[in-house]
Length: 301
Image (cartoon, rainbow, N blue to C red; front, side, top):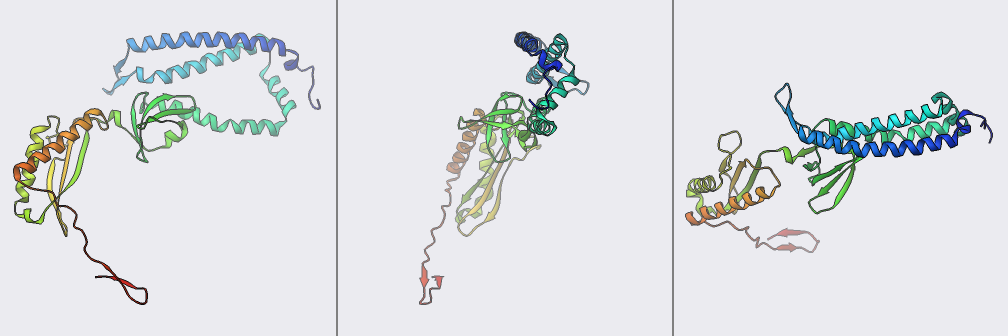
């Protein structure tokens, strides 16, 4: 082959290199499996600690990061062992590769590695930041909610509420705006109620009745003023009076307890309406018709 010296150190030692790679890979994989078990047991026995700032650090949540860093170290040692056993010079190896492929092809190869390298680095940063962990639920900027099932070298697997698992690039996830619902201790319920115009004279009493009923029915309601607890008259429409219910609870969002509490709040509103003998205002049907003249123009009548 033009440009390739078959007497080069690298090509003469191919059989020895192959055997060294085979045995080193087997040893590295065995050590890696043993390492995972030892690391998990160690982190389980030392699950958390309080740092100098008084913040509790969950060691077990950082298991994927520690696991991948040690895995990279093991394979780095394996590669170094192969080079040492075969007495191959790294400089001679790169020189042989350049002779075989040419500088331009080798440059394209390095360029192709840029994307995967960025995703691997993003995964390490994502886990090292401690902002997300396997098993936590995220709310993405597009409104989708999902649970993190796995964080790999290049991509993260998120299972959405419809049970569909999606792989997202670690680089994309690192740049994504999201909220970690599993680390959000409070949730909010906010909705509008529509009452009839004939109830405008007692709308203040209706709001107080709803507020009292919610207060009596929800033990985890936030009452200390740090979050809103309001039932207030906000607007008068053509066919209704608008009342906004805005409450917060010591319940994580998008959990089973959250949806149960939502039902409790709606039932409390229904009981207050029964006590006050009040009904919702239904949207008024528009009885107007369209009049079309001879020129094709139309107007409401």
